Image 1 (spheres, one colour):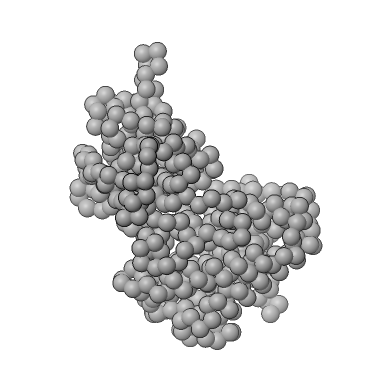
Image 2: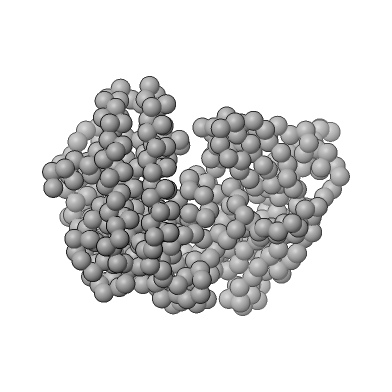
Length: 467
């Protein structure tokens, strides 16, 4: 890269910079060092910087920063290159022209779908672009009203499930309720290993996510008795799973719940539960006083939670496992005013890549959406400052409508247990696993929200005992 840029980068305090970034997932950890792994020049528009972040008590991570060097009053100043129109245009050109940019340790590679090439030929001029201001774990750019670029911030070596699944839906399956795949940018290391840096998809006009439109209806008490949207969402969810179950090849062919999978699942669930217990102990004093007693109560239920997980690894469960969404909730669904489009197939951000690419029971996605209805209800209750029986009843109605439509649409699919009792046990175990994961996530990222999944875990345990 430009020697002046390389020298200037060596003087940047990246540790301090990262702490102020919304997408940085290591805020709860103690940093022991930050190293520049690579800085890839994107013409004279800026560079893509790969940072290795070391922690004292956690595994190192790699993050991506688009940066641009400017000079102000004779002094060098690094700015966010993504804020520059020229840089955003350069990213799109890398994909469209399938450019290959060499660097010291590898090569940046643009990948373009046939559909995007065809649409690009129709463009008379360069599309205007803007960075979306929505807070999230990645960064997003909108080109005109036609294309949407997601720039991944935390990078891992291996196939990105977001890219894999959207490409599958677009090129190998006719499921239409997802954005169309346009292309990607990868960094291929000289010593092996590929990291996906960006994904390009078609833009989907929408009224917001199902999360935002659901909250609006709840807050206005508008349409609280209507279960139509929940039923339609259940139907679309089942159709997504049926499409994924129809795939072939090693990445998509359905597989059985074999002993090896059961053991890996048992290990993952035990680790997540133990992590939740450690975090509760560490953060107890930081929790609001009114929920500390509930947190203390949950600490006494570790053995019971692990026993409940036995339903997930029961040899009698004869269902198959498939690729799934992996982080399914109302915020991952666009409301297109009359229908839904499902987005963001990366999987749960706190899980390592190999876990996010694993095949699982699709009831894990179902559990995620049911938990999201619970989140929506308690979010509104918190804003209103007290319990609201009507809102809680809404949660039950929406959950029942969603689940009924899902099971009707997916009836007979190999990924559902034949026995209703086994299906219920498997779903309950998935609900518990999801709520435990949510407690860990919220304690690390949004401690004020931890009360929602914490009470969810206790409620699931109480309902099981009552049953």
